[in-house]
Amino acid sequence: MGSLTPKMKKRLVRIALAALLLLLVSRLPPLGLPFVGYLIPYAIVGWDVLWKAGRTILRGQVFDENFLMALATIGAFFTTEYAEAVFVMLFYQLGEWFQDYAVGKSRQSIAALMDLRPDEANVEQPDGSVEAMDPEDVPVGAVILVKPGERVPLDGTVLEGQSTLDTAALTGESLPRDAGPGDTVLSGCINQKGLLRLQVTKPFAESTVARILDLVENASEKKARSEQFITRFARYYTPCVVIAAAILFLAPTLLLAFLPAASLPGFLAGTLWSDWLHRALIFLVISCPCALVISVPLSFFGGIGGASRHGILVKGSCDLEGLAYAETVLFDKTGTLTQGAFTVTQVQPVLPGLDREKLLTAAALAEHWSDHPIAQSLRAACHAPLDPARVSQPEELPGLGVQVLVDGVPVLVGNHRLMEQQSIPLPPLPLTGTLVHVAMNGQYAGCIAISDLPKPGAREAISSLKASGVKQVVMLTGDTQEAAAPVAQALGVDSFHAQLLPQDKVTLTETLLAQTSPKGKLVFVGDGINDAPVLTRADIGIAMGALGSDAAIEAADIVLMDDKLPGISCAMGIARKTLRIVHQNIWFALGVKAVVLVLGALGMASMWAAVFADVGVAVIAILNAMRALRASKT
Image (cartoon, rainbow, N blue to C red; front, side):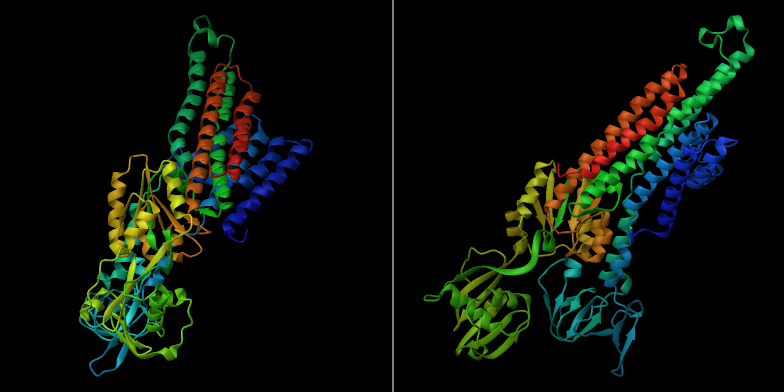
């Protein structure tokens, strides 16, 4: 209850108070005018509905659910069904409260994303001093300093310094990138090690950070939410019912007033104008759509509650409804489909007499002092004790690797460019992933493959999605083609796209959205800050909860709180079951009401039948709606 807003708490108190007063009034013997006793709980629980209905009438928007509820309950008062009038308004408000509670979770995606925006830039002045300035005030061509641990405030080119940059916030790539003189650096990256001197190449308004923020804002505007079902329904249903009730009263009354008794049609014979007023009021009571205005939001609320039991947070009923029509599912790779941490997956020695353990030990010793993620994975995979005394003359080669002496033997550990620089030929190797090459005494010794492994159950989760009717599963990543291809193959996705920046992901999402069927929905699953624009642009955005960024979670429509990918197919199953319950309630309510409406117009339905068609159908629909709380995976 701590998440309730003050407004929701007050509304809940009003509902409880009105329910208590209704119970007391119905138990007490009538004193004087009985409707006065019922008017008090009715006014307490329904005054805001009457107020909203009055305001919409003044604005010229006569027919909405508030007007229909006001008209139906006031009509019930006119037919002396006082308790029924209060009961209908009470349950309507309770349904609205449930709807508000389910949908009222904060969606402040941009506020969370603003952490990506640096507050200041350290600008070097002509006299050599450094001044902190707002990034928006820094001109192109200015020189800025970025210290270790700071976020790069503006796009620029490295003039001096060597470092590694954490680009996960931008590309989702788990492997930090080396930066040295001449390299382009994007704003939003985090400088992990050395001091960098950058020359600004773009104003803040055109920087990478500003573009990401703009993407989230624009994506929010483009993503049109379907109107609430009951509002769409009332737009046509309400005027038809009111007009039908007016005709039911006025037409016979006018015929009775102007036609002689001998000329009256048979259905008017022996009737008075008051009889037709009574029929019209019964017609209004029967037509009250409380079974729909209550059961529809309750069904979705039940589905949302059922999903929460499986660790799935759904932020609104429209999101649950949309998920039932999922046709295309896009996945971010790093941290979503994969574990987001590097692991040694293959060790391939090629030097005669060199085994796997010796090759791995030599590489781990060479990287002994490095805190790079690749170095950490090498040390973690090595089971042999690592004695630093065995290593001497360590030399870091920026952007290439390291050069050391291990037991007096020259050892090179790095990427393929390091081998090319040292004129060491690379033999063809059937390895995939990020490759670390090792050379000893000027000879190629072998290769170690490091990969970001798929999460347990990821392949099964994708297979489950396809089995449930999803037509296309696509993987998106900021990683290289070489790193992405083996992961895509292992997971069994239909296609993948690599080396994507946030704007590329949004563009690709737009393209795939255009390819979905009119009824189909596109779902995106991600966890990083860079995913926020796509999460917002997709029809349905799903964020990984425990390990994901706050921005992505707030931008998403659905959050997997336990980070288990099978939760996606579970959520789809719950969404489809909830939608079936909603459709059952709609057709049941409309079917019963249509029959009783006809009987009421013919004078063959009493107020008891009207109460059943109204309250009885509502209770049955509500009970059916509550089944959604027990929604399972199918």
